[in-house]
Each structure stands twice: as C-alpha cells, then as structure tokens.
Length: 185
Image (cartoon, rainbow, N blue to C red; front, top):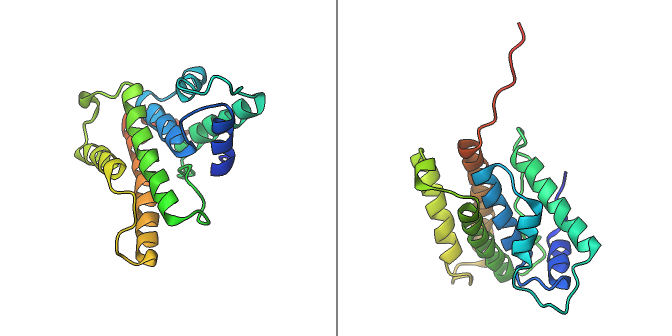
C-alpha cells in the first residue's frame, strides 16, 4: 500500500489544527512501530492533535488519510522486499524545505522510539546503537544548505534518505524479528 503524498498528509494535519507536520508525523509512527511492533492508531492520532488549534475540526477525510499513512507504513516496514519509504517532500520542493523535513522526520523518529518504549537493553547490536545516534545527529544538524553546490547537497540528501530508510528496516528487524515461515519437506 503506497503512502499518500507529503502535501496531502500535511494538509490533513493542518486542516485539523495539528502543529505537527507530515514528516515528523511519519517519523513518530515509524519509531513507535520499530520499538513496539504496533501502534494504537487512536493514541498516535491523539499525539498528533494534542496541541492543536481548537477552532479547527478534524475531518473524516483527514482521519482517512492518516489511516492510510498508518496502514501503508505498517505494511511497508514489515514487507520482505524492503517496500518502505519515508514520508518526505517530493523533489519539486525547495532543497531547504526538504532538508528541514528530513530533520523533522528524524526528530519524530527519536520521539517515536521513546513513545514506543525503547530501552537501552533492547539494543544488542552496535550498528543499531550507531544508527539511532546518527538519527539524533541528523535531527540536530543544520537544516540550511552549506556552501556546497546545490547538486552536491541534493546528492547528499538522497544518500541520507536512503541510509535512514534502510536503517529503519534494519532496526525494525532487530527489535521485531519476522519469524521465518515453516519449511515444508
């Protein structure tokens, strides 16, 4: 199941009065799923709208879009063919907006790991610990392009996104191992 696009999710959140943007929303969900193996949709949506503009109504359409994000992420993160993607702005967005969204996704992911109950003892693999530290570093990193050429910055952004995508799958497998189907002889 494919995720709704970034702007659709952002619109669903903002029309409902959420102060959380799409990238952070998805990061939180991925962190919870990796840590706990599942997430209570109501609890996740409750978090997204905990601090919100009370004058805005959360429409059934917005909830449907968030349901699609939830189900698409759950399916993707547990798919054996690595059919998982981060909910980030498309390439036509300005580079600085994409970098900020990547930082927001990482902040959300770190929060989701905590919300999902991640404990130090759960991390038996040094590569997993290093990945989580990298996510926190990316979240805190400067979100403005440096003096590098835009092409180099673009390439770096693509590489970081792929690193995060594969790291999430690796962390999920480490914390929520999929049991192999029985062998038939």
